[in-house]
Length: 372
Image (cartoon, rainbow, N blue to C red; front, side):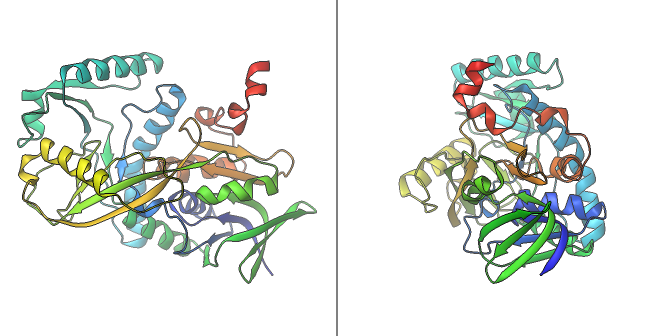
């Protein structure tokens, strides 16, 4: 039975970022991945590195997102130097499109509130149609304006995942696609993890298995109140440059394809697609960019987001099983840099980042919240 300092359960964007963060600091790391049978949120990620609008209810999440966005350029350079793989990260700012004046007013009101809650750390501008046209010359007439934040950007989530996996190996870590982890057992201050036909021993264990954490968390004295939320994405053929910056629903990849998406569907564990949803996504895209009207869609898929009841992350250390941690979120691309450079050091023993101190499962416990 092999022994490591850390076993990371889950080889998606969250688990891989944490594993790389630990490996780059010199720790012995093993990633146990379910493999292609998993509900991989990573492969369905839209690829935004997004700040605007995040943290309306919990402003510290806005700070956490801004921290990660600021660290992203360094992560991109670091991964490319180490692996030769570019994540295609760009940070030109991003826009949220508004299709009515009421939507513009509501958007400004909510972002004003977020800016005040963060003491001005979150900054944005509202653009009318003519101002937006300077950023997106072919914007449709039905778009009346947009909110813009200089802190927003995008990256290729599949290239990011590939780069993280390669970087983990380059730093001496191990990766095993062994199927789902069935059992975690702690004895004498260390953990034994059973994964398929393999058994791994580690001083610490990190649960980063997405929706799989629901069954694993109780084994180490933690809770994972997680539900799936489906998002569908359409991908066009490669087209001429239409978007110099990403939007909430549309972005152009480095290869020239247009990604269209951002549905939110409560359909359980069904990661398929539905014609009516895809039709709505396509119609909204054409309204924003009429040039897409005769463009061919070449791929479409659905994927399941990992959602907590309030939509915010879950980061927690187990009190009854010291050395066990859980990390869940639905923003694996946005938060990748923070997971590498700030979350991983906390898991290794450094001080917890102040922004994430409230993101524990206790906030979902009504009795606990009432008694405070």
